Image 1 (spheres, rainbow, N blue to C red):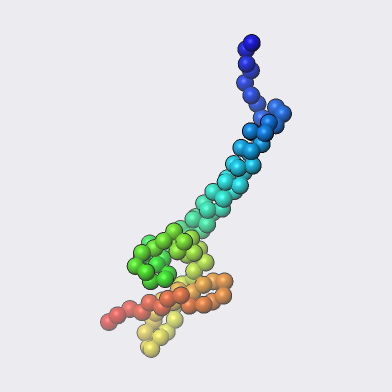
Image 2 (tube, rainbow, N blue to C red):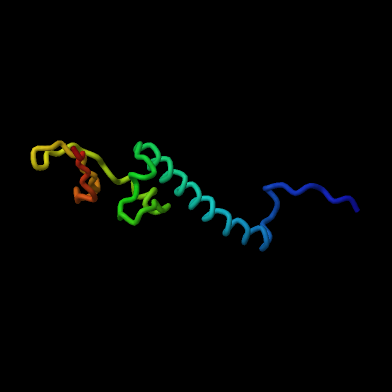
Length: 100
């Protein structure tokens, strides 16, 4: 007997149902990760600047966190410095002042 090709409109089997149940959340998580990564990348920070905890290397979590980090110029001790802050609550993450 010749087997015909399966289509998406055939009755749902338990194997296909489990595959759909696993594939749908995985696709949603991948899309969310991609959107966060694009948002972080568009902030324009260098990879070294995204070391928010000062550990010496930038992790994937710090990279993704950079989508919520703003940059503003502040005056500190008569010098103009760059302040990195969380946009959600305004908390200072790091202050970088030029050295003379």
